[in-house]
Length: 310
Picture 1: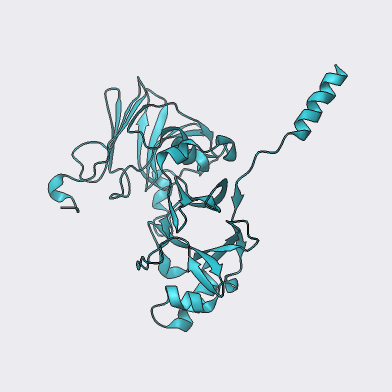
Picture 2: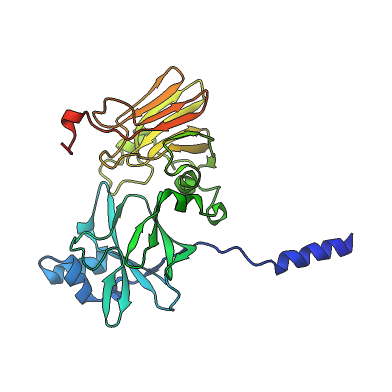
């Protein structure tokens, strides 16, 4: 018995450690060159813009390509956020200049960063073309294509290693969902429960007290629906999909499935089905059969006549 114990211990200690997710680290805003701030983020009153960046902006640093030099993640300040989230920009030093890693050099769109209410900015162990993959939002990962960071394909999410993320933290619920279901519009859904602390998902009454507080908290409730049959409360969050809460546990049912509405505008139960619809939609975008656990995702926001694409 002792020899078997020590053999097992030796094997454990000699096994290579699983790669882990790294995180950008907070850095002083003064580390980012003033001329780059003025060039890329200031349209007028450059002195005021620079001072605003120093006092209201944020900067994080992390080495994405293993060259020993940090890339810098920038939040420019007050003019770059609203109720729907914040803008973040990623830069790399090349020679004496700092260049964007979030767009092709031939793309002249000034808004070349990531706009999200759910930032993460994890540096993932996976790497492509010399640069590590990034998780830039709760449910959005990016990969380097040799020129810029581009969105993951569904298969990329499926290849993520679940041990890189925390299955006891509801703020990782969306990435676990993507690992299992990204790219699928019809699945048999299995809830993955996460513990939550009091106040993590504010109620409607609590939300009303937050109306004048910007930016909104990540789990900002839009609608709630009591479901006595399933013993849960269904929550539709602002730009945060649909969740279910039972006591001090929560699971994530489905993400925001369209880009043209901010949240579920109607949430109801019809027989076995939970139905979630976008603004002015003629049919639900999210349908979940609470008996069979069939989950159907069908992005649809507006009646055709009202569609902003028409």
